[in-house]
Image 1 (cartoon, rainbow, N blue to C red):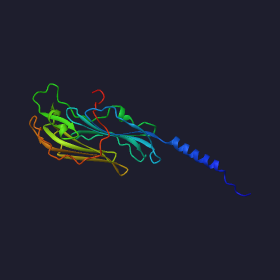
Image 2 (cartoon, one colour):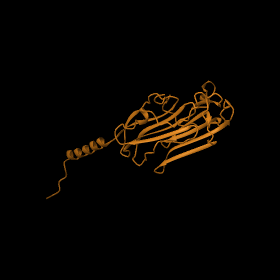
Image 3 (cartoon, one colour):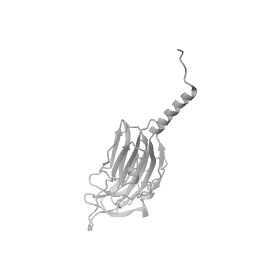
Image 4 (cartoon, helix red, strand yellow):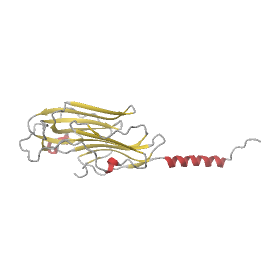
Length: 250
């Protein structure tokens, strides 16, 4: 019996079935990149449908906090492939105090843990409430040297084992290539070094980098009022959103 080819309508029906299966199996994730200083307004997130190479939703955060409670946060959310390891939240113990976290999940729009809830911040200690004869330093955190100078500076009492005032800058990268730089003034703890870096990788890919550099340090109250010694870092990609951050309960 001769072989008969299926009619054209049958092939079109099979193709339509395959496309419907792919659509049914696709994953929707939130997509967002943002840098926030001091307080977070509700992030302006978008909803995206992941392509065939991406089968998990992921979100990543990197937060820096200085004495006085000022915080800078980098947030990223989007589609990823499942070879990315779920890096556990951690604190670095450097100045500024740094916290990070990565959340990976496999259901639609599940990557909103950092977007809609309080972050696991690694915060520095506070000075005793009744402390009087303690070191006091200027405290500020900003995206440019100008945003951490003049009237933008607060005065904070330093906690125990923070014997110096410092001026410094930090550069942070998450999701391989989303980078921001920050300038700060604050109390400096006794174990801090002039420059420190940390790199975290997953599946041979750099997921997170943080470098902190103290450009000036001194031991007298309010002595960290000088200019930032390092030049402004080279321009990075424009920040999709800038806002203010208030940790839950603050």
